[in-house]
Length: 64
Image (cartoon, rainbow, N blue to C red; front, side, top):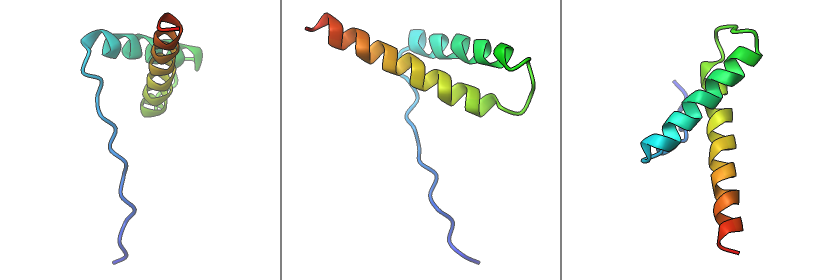
């Protein structure tokens, strides 16, 4: 049996508001794909990236 590549572990957002934003964005992505099942993880990861990047950009702009 060959060793498997480790799966990277991503920390969950600790702020419930961020998690809710991610959940809502993931649902919008799901709707945009015609509500086709089987891509929930992809939708979540894309939504997470978008929400966290947007928040980081806003924080950088606010501190400038």
